[in-house]
Image 1 (cartoon, helix red, strand yellow):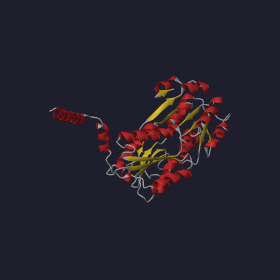
Image 2: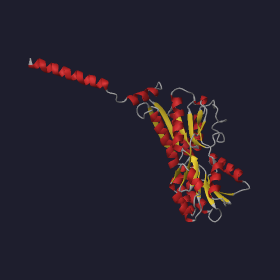
Image 3: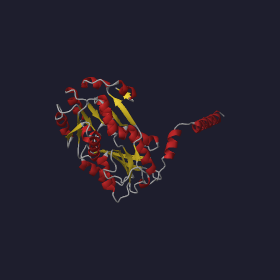
Image 4: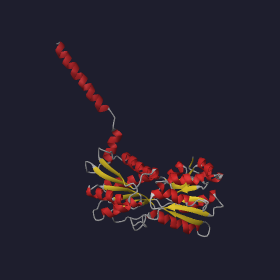
Length: 339
């Protein structure tokens, strides 16, 4: 009888455990996400090509990965991310793109114009989708033929044409007596060349634009130094080469009391003066939404390219002191963030 009672007790305990497990709600959110991410494949492969290591571009990548996770694409479960960085070398960007094609990835997320151009060339005729982000001039760089319309090819993405006209207005508002503006950029980057052309056209007859060009990050400090005594302020558009060595420009500007403005928010956090710049983290999230559509069955050629949806006015008030400037109150009052 004692043995029989013991058996009954064990059976009862087992039933309690089973029933308790059935009532548990753990993992429901992830389960829903997994269901939403059902692509018909066990694991999909996504190649991520970033042109250079820089806080702004790192934010693009982080926003992309965070949003992909929120959309139900979990690394190691239903997606494999192959993340590569070409360290500012166009030849390496081509090698990375060729590798993704050889690996037959399901989609390529390319960050910046050089990486996107390399991916577009490598995937031609393969059908592998390319989603670009952090590209200022998608048409001028040859990625697509027309904005806001389906490309009919394997390419789509998020274009972030820099608001250079508004950026110039911001500089003039902070420095009304501005006469000479130094612009640092790499003319080999299609997006930078396009932006500088727009700047010169917009400022024609009002402000003299002094160009300081570079071909590599090693030339950035010398280019900035060449502007000392010749300009009243310096500006960097969204240029990958200059961004990779932006600290040297900040140093030259602060030591010589030449205010330095940028096209990206992360450089302002490092010590540049101000920008009306793209929200790179949200740009990455926007790109993820397009990639998710493709992985769920939509064709890249049927998805229109989108304009970046969020921009930020960022002012570094502490840096202004080092540049010998006082930011007008009307600028500070409408800033999204003041450091």
